[in-house]
Amino acid sequence: MGKSTAFCGGRNFTAYFISGEVLLSQKSRIKTGEQRMGTVEHILNASEKLGYRKEDILRDAINMFLAANKELREKIAMELYKEGKISLGKASEIAGMSYEDMKELLIKNNITIRRGPESAKELREKVKRLSML
Image 1: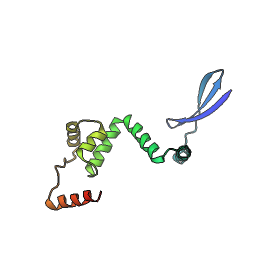
Image 2: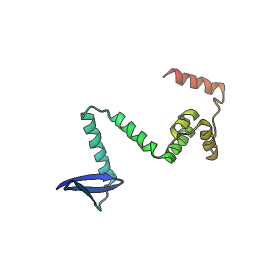
Image 3: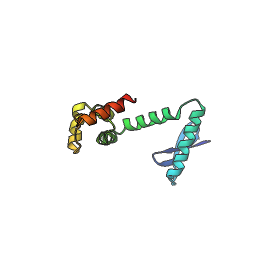
Image 4: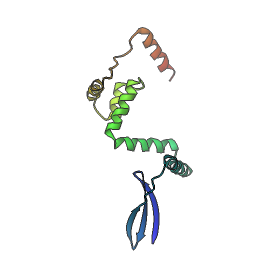
């Protein structure tokens, strides 16, 4: 008989391998946030030792998480747009919707659509910031 423990969906499971079959047993104890972060750090450190970059793993994990959570993608896109950190085009890309659908979503949520710089001063500041890139 083999035994392995896994963490899935906020719960611990123990898998017992008996005669080629897998039996799952859910443990009643749920890991704390601190314990989960320790596990995440262990995974990232082990991956780094295997030649993977932490940044790449985290980026891919976030992308996979967001791919499965449409509502969260939309909320993140709206928040970043509202804060002025991304353009409408980038917001629509993050949300996974067309430019026009993103505009409608922003309007529906009472978020003002930016139509470019408000003044010549604002335009100069934007040009200055872009020239630093």
